[in-house]
Image (tube, rainbow, N blue to C red; front, side):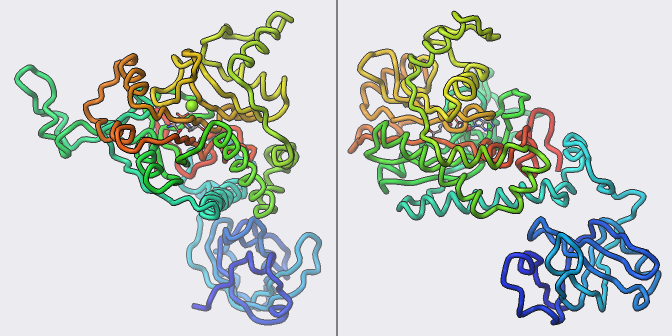
Length: 469
Ligand code: 4AD
Ligand code: MG
């Protein structure tokens, strides 16, 4: 078969040298229309959102072949590339030879008409990447992943691979998916009746990681600055538009960073990614801006051009209490010490400051054991980056580098440290100030695509009771 030219090259690269030459394109038929003499096929090959118009002079083609070319069919087209007469496209191809790889029965192919609901498209998750919307989102996922690696590489960070199977629970939230090869119908037990994990595959109880941070700290305290980027798993039973049971997280960890360094990196990083999207994903963004969220591009630009607010938790609580005093109603109560609900975060970001907020210095009771304790004895140097419409997009902190203070925090929380000796060794040998954060990749994707549901920014979402495809 002839060598295919990706359609993106006909719309984004200089194309003059190809005009009036014979080329080959391959892709999937989006629509076919026309009259007795000529058919117009909109062909999409996924390399760009734009369809290439294939002009078919019906006098030269077999009727039977044309009948088999329907929406969803996969075809290969040889023909002359010409400047387009019609409005809306710059070039088109005049078909000389068409080969059908695969037909798509119009009776059963589910992507016939436009305008399917997001819910329906989730049911056909195996085919939804062939729609304009999901094509745009999946191309943008790639661009964002590439931008993440580029950002850190340029800054001298090393990509550090942390394990997916682990015996430690970084967030100590009890949300881990257990990994076992034991026969669940015949679980080996010890004399006291408890499960005998000595007989399990790893000789101990293991689970899928909720975060690569603890191992990331081992990397940072050896290599200086590292980042991880991989899947993480949380068995939290939250059926919300912002939670997945399997999601991708980016976790940079830096030796010798303090709180200001940390929040500066968080801000620089997100702005870099959003600017990358604006610079590299124009066609897809324009489509999403038209079809999904009319304010999308404006919102992305405004984030790139604004300073994020640094807001101590204690001040945030004051703002919320003032709002309540002035008559604003929240569903959940507000007082110093509570974990803010999403309505509170959104009030601060969307209503009060009208820009992204980096909240810092949280009460230690509502944050994880590893966060650096402040001198006030009450707060820790945790940070959450709060975004319009998304809420928390990043969670991070300066880490407690003192062995004794870390042990106190661990004991206060009754965390079993049996399997954590290696983590404590970082504080025992050559400990150093360090900090890091985790960006939820799909939360970022929600922001840059304007999509409303996190199930629609990952190819195959995993949520409670759903693991299809
Ligand atoms: O705030 P989290 O739980 O922080 C950590 O896991 C730290 N160990 C990160 C670190 O400091 N290295 O999670 C980090 C981010 C959240 O801000 C959110 O964007 C995302 O991960 N996230 C989820 N995204 C989708 N579905 C879920 N169930 C998520 N849980 C957290
Ligand atoms: Mg968090």
